[in-house]
Length: 161
Length: 161
Image (cartoon, each protein chain N blue to C red):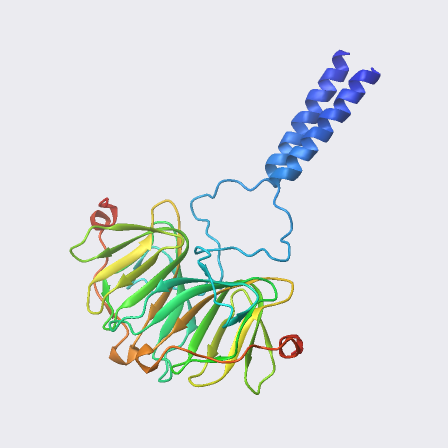
C-alpha cells in the first residue's frame, strides 16, 4: 500500500510539472508580442539601449509614406528628434514613454495612438521594466523624414509624468 | 493493490484533464488577437458578412492620413472599392484574402504588408475559416478617401489563388 501511495505521489508530481511547462507563465519584464520580425538594431548614435527596427513600407513617390516597426527593449529610447511632416505611432504591445518638448512625459501602452506634429522635438521609448512594440507612420515624406538630435538623458527619461 | 491502481489512474486522468483546460487550444475559426477595440459594425451596403471598424487617426490637413483597424469575421469581406491615393494594409492577426482587379486572389496572414495603388479596384477580407485583423493606412487624403463599388460575389471570393 505504501509503495502504491508513493507511486501516486510520484505520478501526480510528474503531471504537475508537465502542466507547468505547458502553461504560459506571466509575462516577464522584457516580453512583448511581435507581429513583425525584429529587424536590425538601431544605430547607437540615435538610440540609448537596444531598439530594433523593421521596415514595412519604403518611401516612394506614390504613397509618400514611410511605415515601420520598432521594438524597444526595456529602458531603450530614441534620441530627441524632429519629423518635418510629423509622425503617428500605434503602440501594439508593451509599455513605453513619449515626450514632446515642453510637455510632460506620457506613459503609453498597447492600443494607444500618438501623434507628434511636424517640426516638434520629441522622443519615445520603452519603460524601464517592459519593452514596447510600436508601428510608426511618417506621412508626406516629400517634406522630409527625420532630423536626429541629442540623446535623452537619464534625468529626462526618469522624470515622472 | 487494485484499489490503489484505480486511485492512480483516477488521479492521473484528473490531472490530465486539469492540464488540458489550462493549456491554450489551437486557435478556432473566429479567434484573432485584438490590439484595438472592435469598434462599429461596417455598413451592410459596403461589406458582406460582419466587419468591425475602429478609427485610429482621423483625417486632417496636418497629416493628410487616415488610419484605422478593421476586424473581419470569418467569411466577411469588403465590396470592391477604389482609393484615389492608394492604400497600405498591415495584417496584425489571422488569415484573409486580398485581390486587385485582374490579378489572382492573394492569401494574406499576420505580419504581411499589402499595397494597393491609387485608382485600382480591389477588395479584402477574412478567410472562410479564420478572421483577420488589419490596420489600414490611407495616405494623401487630399486626393480622396474611397469610392465604394459592388459586392464581391461568392464565386469571386471562393476562387482559389
